[in-house]
Image 1 (cartoon, one colour):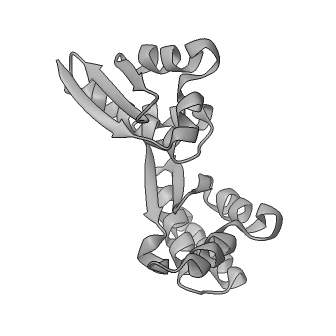
Image 2 (cartoon, rainbow, N blue to C red):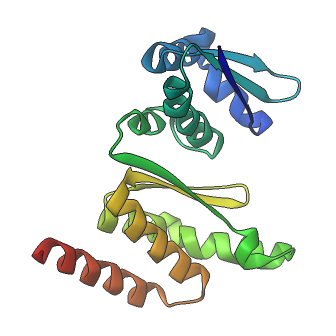
Length: 174
């Protein structure tokens, strides 16, 4: 029996479990694992007869923990999809003001920046806690990550969007 433990934010435990445990059972069935939840410590224990099932389930749990809707997180069962988590502390250090400013740059007014990158790259983006997370097909996640990191580095939004569009056009020309 293989086992893996994942600590998730307290406010995401209920999301992982779902109404009457429905989502937890759905993920267990989808990935062929058993999920044990310690609500007091927000510790999730995954158990399975084979390590591949654990490998498949772990990104789904991490995605839910990083603020994604469970239906979007379930896309990760497809091997063509991946989850990328960008730690904002790498850009903001210990400054709370800088952290807030960077999160705001990624979200944009009314969520426009996040939506624009999602549409340009055909990905899903979640800004949660001290992270920006991306789910999508591997090549699209790479594009979205580059865009988010450019924004975090201070590049103007318009320039970032143009660069993403140019990269998309180059890759579709191949």
